[in-house]
Image 1 (cartoon, rainbow over the protein chains, first blue to last red):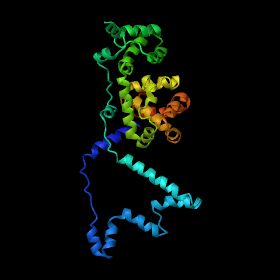
Image 2 (image 1 turned 135 degrees about the horizontal axis):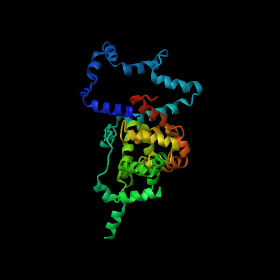
Image 3 (image 1 turned 90 degrees about the horizontal axis):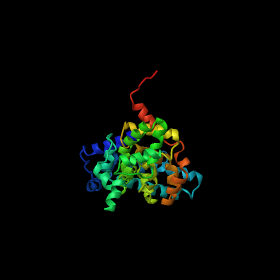
Image 4 (image 1 turned 30 degrees about the horizontal axis):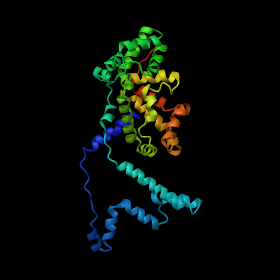
Length: 139
Length: 186
């Protein structure tokens, strides 16, 4: 647990060392102007999205998206859709959780320290419930 | 025990006696079997634990907040679930953190656990990782069955045997053991 925590903190700290990736937008105008010949080249560069779209038409290939839908279809036809909707909702939640900025608070940083925190006497005197505080209350 | 606690009350006149201190003294006294040694052992232990017994509970609140941040970082899904159950104040861990699981674990496990925690080998706040390990161990039950704060509280308080039975304590010990330089004793 501790090691995992340590690695997570280090990963978050190191994240800021890298430059932010530049967002690449698809050249929409060029693709539409280029016609049919330019399309294969454009799809070749973005393989992640294309495999899903081709997978729906091609029955032999089974990308991740289809694999999850295929299991409920074997058991019962009606059950497929609600399950997938729940899965999508869950995925969204996970994405939201992942997208939250991970900030290491000072409290968490203290967990990496081996130094034992001993309260100064002043604080204990102020907030303690000892004989001294009883005397103070009487005054 | 009573004499020792009264003596400590005189020794540390600022803090006084607060419920839970006897839990911290008992294992030390049982092991040391000597009033003077046990007292000084307890006094040193209290150096780090007195923050738990302040009137404004600032020490406890800080630890619960740290646990909150720790779970949020390490297991965001569980954190979201606890948030939906109004349990991210982690109040159900209050007693466990107050007396370092003294009332939850079995006697021998406590002796073992405290020795591990006293080493501060990886962190002086290692008891919070024990808390995280307990949560992870019971993650399935929490996620599936505990939907409200009172359910979480009830589960943690009433079923302490279930809560702590075969918890991840052994694996946390293994981490410390593996990292510790081996001392060969004949």
